[in-house]
Amino acid sequence: MNPNEAPIIVGLDIGTTKIAAIAGRKNEYSKLEILGFGRASSTGVQHGKVLNIDQTIKAIQQALQNCYESNPDLEISEVYVGVAGHHIKSIQTRGDIVRQNPDVEIEHWELDQLVENQRKTFIPAGDQIIDVIPQDFHVDNYQNIKDPVGYNGVKVGANFHIITGDRNAIRNINRAVERSGLKTKDLVLQPLASASAVMSDIDMEAGVAILDIGGGTSDLAVFYEGILKHTAVIPFGGENISSDIRMGLGVLRSQAEAMKVQFGSALTDEARSNAFITIPGLKGMPAKEIQVKNLASIIQARMSEILDFVTYHLKQVGLDSRALNGGIILTGGGSQLKHLIQLTEYVTGLNARIGYPNEHLAANHIDELKKPMYATCIGLILKGYSDYENKRKEFDNKFKKIDVPDILKKGRPAVNGEKNMPEPEDVDVKKRKGLSSFWDKFKDGIIDLFKEEGDQEIK
Image 1 (cartoon, rainbow, N blue to C red):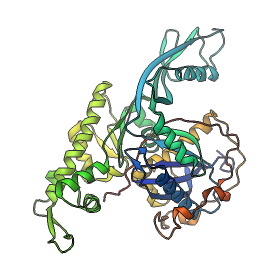
Image 2 (image 1 turned 180 degrees about the vertical axis):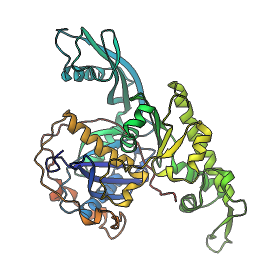
Image 3 (image 1 turned 135 degrees about the vertical axis):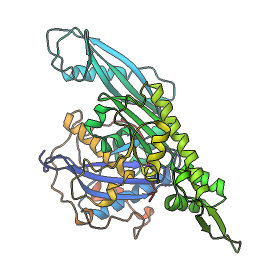
Image 4 (image 1 turned 60 degrees about the horizontal axis):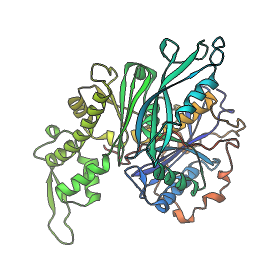
């Protein structure tokens, strides 16, 4: 791919604890060069849902401003947005069409028609279809075909994984993005975005479960024999662990978060029984001593609950430890908890590892972007490139050359999303030159879905 012709695509991850905006473009080696990066604290989102639109808009504008600070040459008008939350559901359907001329080879437009027909599937009132994902195709009596283009036959059909979401929740996401001066190019289910960032083709073939542990939710995507078999949103995440610590140990939320990050462990047996954390007392009250083992027991209880959900979902689709040779890939901010891999293997019986979004990044990226918490944002850019390369959407190929700024190169400090930046109210994003259109021919889209990422780094 010629880097001068490749579009610059922007991923916007609207999470419970952070909002991140990353701009990237593929180079001649098909690796992502990061051209801009900004983040801000998120206060208007809870469990993946935008509840306070004004606060969310300010956070989006702040993340954009920080992205522009990292590269003033950027022009951002359209973004791929991640979506997740309790309201996300999935259903399996099957559909086919009878072809007018069986002797003519099957073409791409017929597959597009198949997908479009599934968008008429009946779903509960108040929901809307976010994405329709073909799993495997069949032509007449031939089953389990990955790509039927070029086959001949009377009838072509497929099994579909349809992802739906609450209409109002999706409307709030789109409204927050539009009122920030942007256009939603596509909505992408967050576990699918994260999966594309941390998973290889070998993983997909072997069979793997991707668990993205975010702030408000944990998102699951299961792949087997190269096919997306299942998606689910588990209604617990890093914020729930912090809340449990706050209530169980009688500390402030900020103290609970700090203890989780600095001293937390997902295994009680690995915590030292003679280690204590001293918490300053409030307004002259005596300091409080907390046993590290008690902290670990609270974290293990909540994480075990999340992993029990994973086991339940795997059994629902008939995939146990013998089927998923690739095991479980943990990603998202919550995946950095100490000893989480051991707990995951113990509860699920599957091999586990941490998924870092490095595989698709060019060598000159900053170390900050290697963290699992940015897997969704990197995956959103990859989704944009999937659309571009499959030519399923119209792209304008005339882009000016933008070099990777020094501040985004390896070894240089990352952009600080909360430091020395103007207040969001002072940022007139709409008036920026950066908001002129990248893709003049972009179509409106609602699309993939949503995940949400934990913002805290667990050391």
